[in-house]
Image (cartoon, rainbow, N blue to C red; front, side):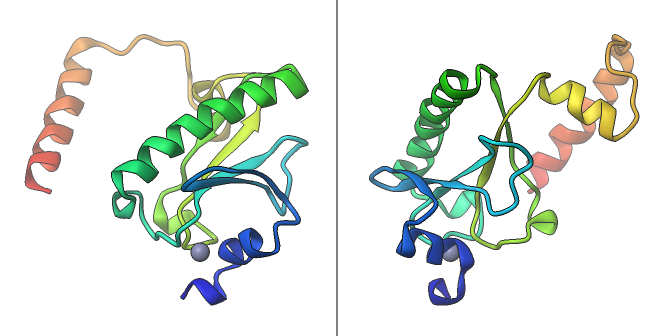
Length: 140
Ligand SMILES: [Zn+2]
């Protein structure tokens, strides 16, 4: 499996790898949205986040913070982190995108999905959403 994985191969040939930790590495994206667009991902081929070991999961977030500080230093922009749902991933090897950004995740999502983004939601709507999600998570 790992043999045919483009992201596993990137770790093997090392030419676009910016950082290698114990369990996690940072790869400069093949299709840069802008300079500084990187992926943070486990060295082992894992196909979902819940397949990560506890050590891998912990290091994913530590390296995300470390890399975010580096992106701020290099590009003078705070990075946003984006995790694609499995159905939207072009690679099966789990990864997190980090992109130096001028705005926050909420602004980007609102712009892409054409949503108002500074309107406070009524408590009763938030309660309905809370109930639906809590029920679904209990059943999972
Ligand atoms: Zn892989």
